Amino acid sequence: MLSASELANRLARDAEAVCRHYLSAGRRAGNYWVVGDTANSKGKSLYVHLTGPRAGRWADGATGEYGDLLDLVRETCDLVEFRDVADEARRFLNEPRPDPAASRRGDARTDPPVDRPADERAQRLFRMSQPLAGTLADSYLRKRGILRASLHPSLRYHPSCYYRDLVTGRTHSFPALIAAVTDPGGAITGVHRTWLDPDGAGKAQVEDPRRALGGLLGNAVRFAFPVCGPVPVMAAGEGLESILSLSHVMPAMPMVSALTANHLAAFELPPECVRLYIAADADAAGRNGIERLSRRAQARGILPLVLAPELGDFNDDLRLDPSRLIASLRAQLAPEDASVFLPSR
Image (cartoon, rainbow, N blue to C red):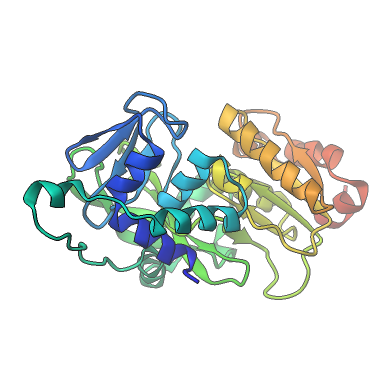
């Protein structure tokens, strides 16, 4: 049985065939497949790398969504559970498909070289990073009101992290906040990178200063999760800084940042969970992610409760007034959770 990363790598070896099957409204443009969106609309907002070390990786410039070909299969087929995504991928891989390039050349098909799996590259990048405390990334988060980020082992700093412009192909290096994406057992399956301005002015001035690498499906960046033992109450949301803001005022509550609405919907819930707080995001994709995760939670007998910010997101609330954020959360949490996770009045 192939793992998620192995399935993604197998799909990436035949990225164009995957795109022709699941995104038939698109077309090849150089080394990319371009299409409108994951709903297979006409357009050119979404692009998929067909060759090179990023083969199979895709991003939608309009929504900010991105992922690998497993994520693409999930979205185009409207699947949620990983087993269904894996079954669909295996079905596709087992079907014979003509090779247009081979038929034009009249020769046999040869597979491209196998790249190092994305999860291995993610693990290597995290190992090469350094502790967060006192770094530019720590300073960046402190300016956003997140003062205790260095206590989280899932966050690290890289002083010169590789960045590639997906349009021009040019490469640069910037300092970066590195967040480990882990599976339920705590193994690193991916990383999330936030590239920063070397002068400390905020995020780097690039087209997309946030990107993920590796296996996100079902996984997340975790905060205050126990190494072992049950997780009866937890919070989940999309954005890293939004969840870090909630963790700043509720440091003992286990939380996850799934990084996108689609990955929030597919997050693998702990088996012992009783109540799930879902941090709201105001856009349409965010609402869809909340609804899909809520349905999955209810099907498991878990009570989903939505936490709503007063402003644009929870980081805006934290920077405005931490005490006001705490008061707002107190009104939204179950009384027994408010007494455990929020500061006493």
